[in-house]
Length: 385
Image (cartoon, rainbow, N blue to C red; front, side, top):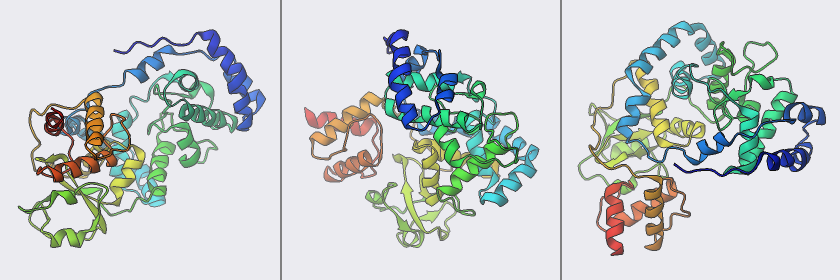
């Protein structure tokens, strides 16, 4: 565990009273609001510890999906769909987003409103803006939180959530509340944190709609690839019309022709040895909610299960060592050294790293699926010797 040696509380208090106060005024936060909310705001070193010690290991996709779409989460989600049937129907009519998609996000974010976090958001954001990583980002979110208070949308005592400042049933950051929050019940406030999930679920639907959600289109489907499929065509950075994927031999799992979903990608979450997914534009919308590919698959799969869908048919690789962020950084460094630029070393697998891995695989006679796992890291290390 990384140990944080935080700045002193005196340093923090001076920063709040000086630098932060001036910046807040520049962002049109009123002096009376700043004084009322920020006077004696506490410094939270535990928040810095949480940021520094975020989970280093990624779960294998099979284990993650077992948690995301567990029997309990499916059972509870179906119960919530029944309990709030009228609300979900109203939201669907207003925003054109299926109830199961909204419920899946609700279920993954907070267990359907059970675990919304109890950390005071203003002190957490102020601490991160003062001494955390991505300080500018958290400072902007702090000003958004202050603006919510200034607008009368929420009281300071109800601004409680995760260590990173996310609040409510859908775990919105304050800026997202300002931009996408909906007062569906018409009481004059966008309440995302109360026991009544009306505004929160409408806000989730509004977020998806504003980012391009298409009602009636799945996020993706499991598909079967032909024997001599060119794996270099896979990845979220490459799209083809569904009819062209069909022409190349890609089929539904029952051997049928692919429906016309428009531009789609073939995604191999665990490489060529695992399930193949045909993803649509709605998958990219889910990635706007949370950029982790596993999260978007988890939401989509949970939504499918809530509507009566079945588990994935294809198996997943067994007993494969999961890469840490340090392993990923090493792989990014080695790929870049060998001429396959990942455009940065951040310990996270994004489209640039996937493209670099795919190019390296193709040039070295490997299956060019772009999957960065333990086997590819071993090859990269061996090439260095």
